[in-house]
Image 1 (cartoon, one colour):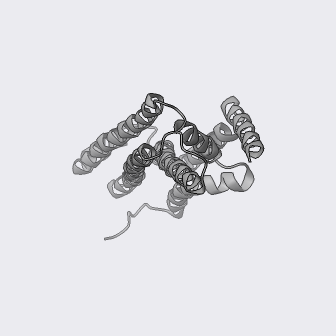
Image 2 (cartoon, rainbow, N blue to C red):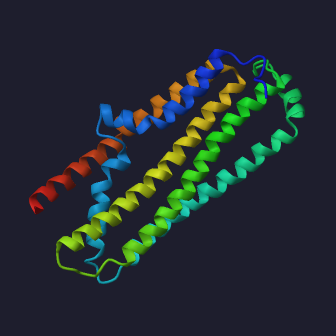
Image 3 (tube, one colour):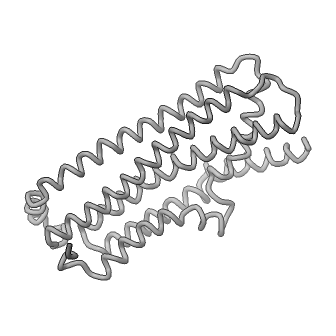
Length: 239
């Protein structure tokens, strides 16, 4: 199997930057800041699981978990539909190439390079789909762990371990979900490969900057940081 004749080193840089920006997102945030908002909210979920055991009835907690599960299932289904549509283009890639060639804003490329560019989009969405399904499985585990927590139990070491484990699995489930969501952003950036490798690199950097901005400088990020700080102070006083 030969590579597309018009595949350049700049295309390879664009491909590598897409996946590097996606996979190194959380480590970079942890290195230069407080980490992702999801990581910061870990202690909030720990508090949630602890408080849920003190309620005589827990329909509120069940509703919250069901909302999360429904959201994950929706995105998983949407990813599968988009993947099926994109895979369908490979059966008519020659016709698709002929149509795109008539658009002036699309960069000239061979049919093989077009297939390679679309393969990158398919790969990103495929990884996102598996992230959503893994998140769904973790949420099912969370339901079992949450349902097994004793009501109004005394603060014992064993009880604290159960609470911490349940909150950890829930946080991991949301982490997988967020990873899948970020895949959507980078799939959009990958579509700019149709315009050329340079527009794709610019789009990838723009997406990365936008995600970092939303995680650090927005009103929502600051409010979550303030909330988490308040919870941390309460936990220190509690101990």
